[in-house]
Image 1 (cartoon, rainbow, N blue to C red):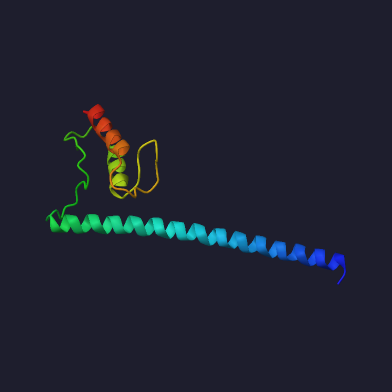
Image 2 (image 1 turned 90 degrees about the vertical axis):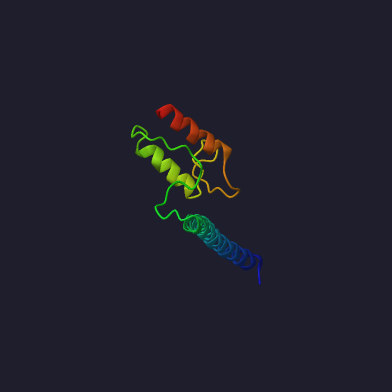
Length: 119
């Protein structure tokens, strides 16, 4: 084999490795999405089981967040509470990421501040 053949063969192998690396990256992204969904579902199941055990069949907040009695809070606040209870951060520090270590003080502070401002 001459040098040119070896170089072209090496280039071809590099291209194949690059394609495999891209495919591996795509698989990794899919695994991350599946793990996040699995975590969300586990948290949701846990929350639903706790509600069943407590006899709270109507739903309600799973976090002790003050829920104002008047209608001025609105749909936005309800959506934030729902997202938080589904296991996502709603604070500006980690917004949209999964909560993996229990409650987030930043999120709870934000919810408390929002509910107090709306009263």
